[in-house]
Amino acid sequence: MAVVEEARPRARTVGGSREQVAAWTSRYARHAFCVDFVAALLGGLIAFGIRFRYPSIGSPWSTPYIGGSLVLPFLWTGTLGVARGYEQRLFGVGPEEFRRILQAGFAVTATVAILAYATKVEVARGYVIAALPLTTGFDLWGRYQLRKRLHRRRKDGEYMRRVVVVGHRAAVGDLIRQLRRERFHGMEIIAACLPTMLTSGEDAVAEVEGVPVAGDFTGVGGVVEGTRACTVAVLACPELDGIALRRLAWQLEKDAVDLVVAPALMEVAGPRTSIRPVAGLPLLHVEHPELSGGRRLAKTIFDRAGASLALIFLSPLLASIAIAIRLGSSGPALFRQVRVGRDGREFTVLKFRTMVVDAERRKASLVQYNDHDGVLFKIRNDPRVTRTGAWLRRYSLDELPQLINVLRGDMSLVGPRPPLPDEVAQYGDDVRRRLVVRPGMTGLWQVSGRADLSWEESVRLDLRYVENWSLTLDLQILWKTWSAVAHGSGAY
Image 1 (tube, one colour):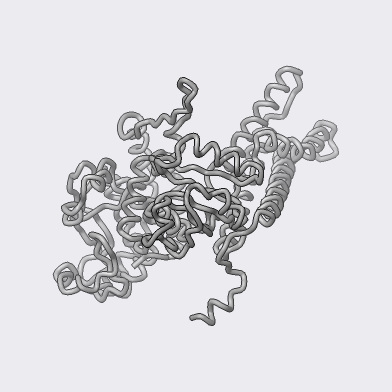
Image 2: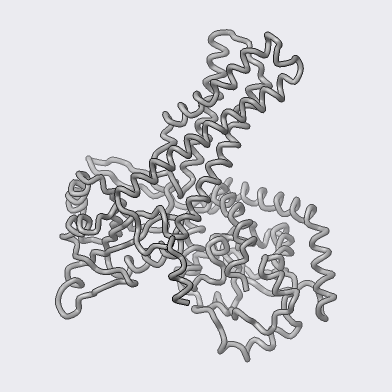
């Protein structure tokens, strides 16, 4: 195994230096500019071809639109520049990069409409209607592909940022594990600063999760200078008050080192938070999660409409899977099991049968082989799984009958994992928070590793979803589900 690891020279164990980060961010910005320019050029030329197939290109009426198609890339990239679409903090993670592109699309459309109205110039509506949506769509696709390329490079240890993390030992350990698992964030923690009592004396901590402890809270500036870090991540801790953070920011400012601060409410997403200055203090206002009312109704309509369409289009596949199960082993094609839904109500979940008929009776003899921690029961090579069932599990096809549960209102397309009653019986008060929304066919737990996740990680992801639910988040999870299912990782 050691020989295999040594044969991968591209993998690195530490993030890039400040100079390397500056170089790759500049290069990424240039690539993003090229993608934007080409997207606008293609959008304009294709729209011209759609609108002006007749008359021919030589027609005087169509001539101005040839020039417009050539000017559009400059207008588009200029608008993105004004909308700050090339800021380095947008590269690689988060939806803000794509939101800026959508904003640019609306801005250019509004500008063309206002100018046409003000100057009373006749504009071919068919050209505008085709050119700007095409440009926006091409650009979103191009930026997405650019981001996926960046993620692949980061998986190999490239294009990373050197990070010094400041906080208490448990929080520091959690962040290190999470960033190692989610390398697409591009942050490599190379040193940690802990409270003074843990950095000196007989009980001094030398490292956290393999990361060396380089100092305490008073020596962050020196640690950053010695490690050539690009970013300092400060986790929530009472020792670092506003005055201490301000002084740290002044220290980092001269070297252009980024400072990121995690609030005490770690799992609350940006849309629920806003800064409200009160008496000269920037207070963080946190909105309560919307778990009822119009947004829940919109989610219900979206779920049932999506489930209906999926059942119609997937009906041939569902029938084929049912036949394969019946031919592969004796017993029914569907498996029914009691699960716990919203507000603790029990319901019967439907799945394609992937195990032998007496699987539940044989479970007691296999408990000692459980590969999972916490309250979940999972065996990587479960002897009860049939040959057809193993294939269905790998690509999550066994869960397709849950579309019927979505139509019934028992489940949602996206939500926490539907638990068993004996699992719920072991829940603590915090974990029961998962039950305030309908369970989902997919969720953050599935697109983040599925069965490879520990119990604590799966709970954290489910709670994050509950606290930050939105239709936009649902769409993002559904999009990522395709990739997770195609790779089949964590499915057993």
